[in-house]
Structures are given as C-alpha cells and as structure tokens.
Image (cartoon, rainbow, N blue to C red; front, side, top):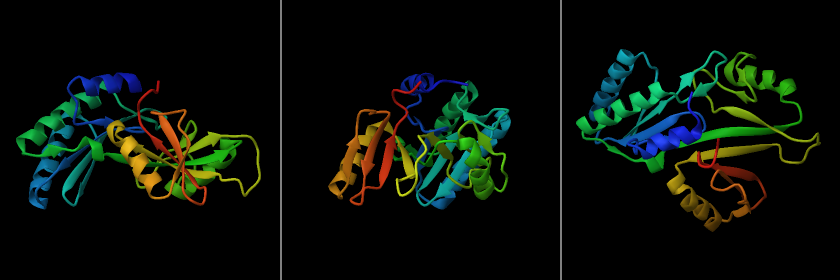
Length: 220
C-alpha cells in the first residue's frame, strides 16, 4: 500500500487527471454522449481485466467516474502501485477516446459518527448499511460493493444527546476546496475551525450542524 504523501507525489509526477480521496484514487472524464462514454468504459474494463484489477466505474450524464483502490485481507481499501499503473493506462485511453479529465469535480461523501466505544456500535451499523455485521475495518464500516458511503467512528468522551453525534465528511480535490468553502459561507454557513486545513476544515450551517471539508493534503 502507498501513503497519502506517496500518492500525492505520484499525482504531481504525471497523474494530473487523478485526485486522492478518502480511500480511492479518483478521476472524472467528460464525455460528449452516452455512446462515447460506453466505448470508453468498455476500453477501461478491458484494460482492467487484463491487469487483474477491479475499478469502480460509474457512467453518468456527461461524465464517467473511475475510482481505483486495492482491498487488503481485512477488507480495507488502499491505493497501491498497481492502481497507479492502471490510472496511467486509463488516462491514456481517455486521450485516445478524445475525453477531457476534470479532476476538480471528483468528490466522495463519507459519514462520521461520534462514539466513545466504536466496537459496541460498529456491528449494528455494519449490519444495517451492508447486511452483514462484520464489514468493519478498524474504525470504519466499508461496504465491499460500495452501495453506501463509508462510515467512520470518531472517538469522543461519553456524552448524552442532544450533542451532535453525526456529521458528513466531504472529500474534494484540493484545488477546489477553498472555493467550495467560500460558497458554503456565502450561502449562510460559518467556518467553525480551520486549524486542520488543508487536511480538513469544519463548517456549520445556520442551525449549527457541522460538516468537514476534507482533502488528502497534509496526511500521513
């Protein structure tokens, strides 16, 4: 597995189409129409099969999203050298198909729950979200088929409601994080804590509900 710093260094060294999010290496490619998008998806699938890789591919309106990661024995997902190799191949295929990368648009939503003992609550949330209680990797529930966002448990002291226990982590490309924060503030939000930037910045809506805007920068 590669560290965040190693992945970011690889992005700077020829993988400019891609951005590191919470777990995967991700890219978005603009497409002219569904037929062109499907042709590109087929090419990516063929290259992935030849390399023995299993990318997450989403064909949406006007774009194809590709996410690359490798599962370890525990079910955790990490970026590896093999994922970097496939990323280079996918970018080459995109150029061959006349597609344009828009790395600033990659996004991942992750849920976070404050708890003093994640081992007590994790099986419940794993069973609810994935159908099985055992899809817990460390302090995170990871659906092996990516049907739902990942859920990680943030350690805290014991407390009673109504203190907020839930918040969302929105992972963005580093170059768009400041603009997104500014847009949220202009729409009525406030910056609660920017001491962790650019790794994460805590915002709140007008009712005080908190959310973190996260990037892969300044993380081990």
